[in-house]
Length: 164
Image (cartoon, rainbow, N blue to C red; front, top):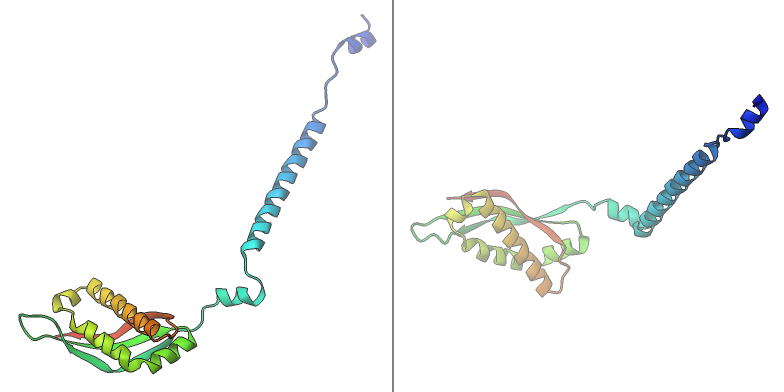
């Protein structure tokens, strides 16, 4: 056998270049499709223009002090105990702030009644004070709702609380 016939009899090596190019094109297409899919979904769920700026930036909190301080007898039966509390109501909504100011006497009344139902033991722990804040917030919102006013009150805050 001559050298020419030996080359002809040996199988030809196939180039792997088309396979590699095909894999790169497939991966690039998949990556591009994935990017397009995430961008399309993000754009569909994102607010546009000014609405986006309004939702990302919170309005400044405004506090309304319910002056003078609350002073109530607690519901303890073993001895006379008192609660003194400075309370502020927090909102970020101007119409709600106006409603709080207009309804301040009724809000004070509801909170006085609520505070007078507490005992010193209930208010001795942080959890009792936090529960009282939540109940106070519910009372304020309930009153505003009953009066047909905006109810975007976010918190009832104690700036001073003394149990004696």
